[in-house]
Length: 95
View (cartoon, rainbow, N blue to C red):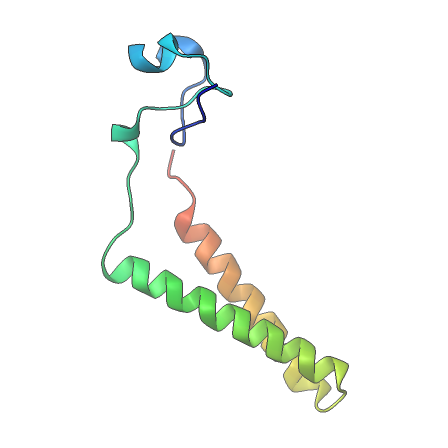
Protein backbone atom coordinates (compact mmCIF):
# COMPACT_ATOMS: atom_id res chain seq x y z
CA UNK A 1 0.00 0.00 0.00
CA UNK A 2 1.32 3.43 -0.94
CA UNK A 3 1.66 6.05 1.79
CA UNK A 4 0.30 9.55 1.38
CA UNK A 5 2.85 11.74 -0.35
CA UNK A 6 1.57 15.26 0.25
CA UNK A 7 -1.05 17.55 1.67
CA UNK A 8 -4.19 17.95 -0.32
CA UNK A 9 -6.91 20.42 -1.14
CA UNK A 10 -8.59 17.76 -3.28
CA UNK A 11 -12.06 16.78 -2.18
CA UNK A 12 -12.45 13.66 -4.28
CA UNK A 13 -10.43 11.08 -6.15
CA UNK A 14 -11.41 12.78 -9.44
CA UNK A 15 -9.20 15.77 -8.64
CA UNK A 16 -6.02 13.69 -8.29
CA UNK A 17 -3.38 13.08 -10.92
CA UNK A 18 -3.36 9.82 -12.88
CA UNK A 19 -0.30 8.51 -11.01
CA UNK A 20 -2.10 8.86 -7.70
CA UNK A 21 -5.24 7.10 -8.96
CA UNK A 22 -3.38 4.09 -10.33
CA UNK A 23 -2.02 2.86 -6.98
CA UNK A 24 -4.15 2.21 -3.91
CA UNK A 25 -3.43 4.94 -1.38
CA UNK A 26 -4.29 5.63 2.21
CA UNK A 27 -6.83 8.41 1.71
CA UNK A 28 -6.19 10.70 -1.22
CA UNK A 29 -3.42 13.21 -1.72
CA UNK A 30 -2.20 15.92 -4.05
CA UNK A 31 0.82 15.37 -6.26
CA UNK A 32 4.27 16.18 -4.87
CA UNK A 33 4.73 19.06 -7.31
CA UNK A 34 1.89 20.94 -5.58
CA UNK A 35 3.62 21.04 -2.19
CA UNK A 36 5.22 24.37 -1.29
CA UNK A 37 8.12 24.26 1.12
CA UNK A 38 9.21 27.10 3.35
CA UNK A 39 12.88 28.03 2.97
CA UNK A 40 15.28 30.79 3.91
CA UNK A 41 14.66 33.35 6.65
CA UNK A 42 11.04 32.32 7.17
CA UNK A 43 11.98 28.74 8.05
CA UNK A 44 14.76 29.94 10.35
CA UNK A 45 12.43 32.36 12.12
CA UNK A 46 9.79 29.69 12.73
CA UNK A 47 12.44 27.27 13.98
CA UNK A 48 13.74 29.83 16.45
CA UNK A 49 10.19 30.63 17.58
CA UNK A 50 9.59 26.92 18.27
CA UNK A 51 12.82 26.62 20.26
CA UNK A 52 12.03 29.75 22.26
CA UNK A 53 8.49 28.50 22.85
CA UNK A 54 9.73 25.17 24.19
CA UNK A 55 12.27 26.85 26.48
CA UNK A 56 9.80 29.44 27.78
CA UNK A 57 7.08 26.85 28.38
CA UNK A 58 9.48 24.49 30.16
CA UNK A 59 10.93 27.33 32.23
CA UNK A 60 7.48 28.58 33.15
CA UNK A 61 6.37 25.13 34.26
CA UNK A 62 9.57 24.70 36.23
CA UNK A 63 9.04 28.03 38.00
CA UNK A 64 5.45 27.11 38.82
CA UNK A 65 6.36 23.64 40.11
CA UNK A 66 9.24 24.88 42.25
CA UNK A 67 7.07 27.77 43.50
CA UNK A 68 9.73 30.37 42.95
CA UNK A 69 7.94 33.22 41.22
CA UNK A 70 4.38 32.37 40.21
CA UNK A 71 3.76 35.57 38.21
CA UNK A 72 6.87 35.19 36.06
CA UNK A 73 6.17 31.49 35.61
CA UNK A 74 2.66 32.20 34.33
CA UNK A 75 3.96 34.94 32.02
CA UNK A 76 6.64 32.62 30.62
CA UNK A 77 4.04 29.90 30.09
CA UNK A 78 1.68 32.31 28.33
CA UNK A 79 4.47 33.68 26.13
CA UNK A 80 5.52 30.18 25.09
CA UNK A 81 1.94 29.28 24.17
CA UNK A 82 1.58 32.50 22.16
CA UNK A 83 4.74 31.58 20.24
CA UNK A 84 3.31 28.14 19.43
CA UNK A 85 0.12 29.82 18.26
CA UNK A 86 2.06 32.16 15.98
CA UNK A 87 3.93 29.26 14.40
CA UNK A 88 0.65 27.38 13.90
CA UNK A 89 -0.95 30.38 12.20
CA UNK A 90 2.00 30.95 9.88
CA UNK A 91 2.21 27.30 8.83
CA UNK A 92 -1.49 26.77 8.07
CA UNK A 93 -2.25 26.37 4.36
CA UNK A 94 -3.93 29.38 2.77
CA UNK A 95 -6.58 27.43 0.93
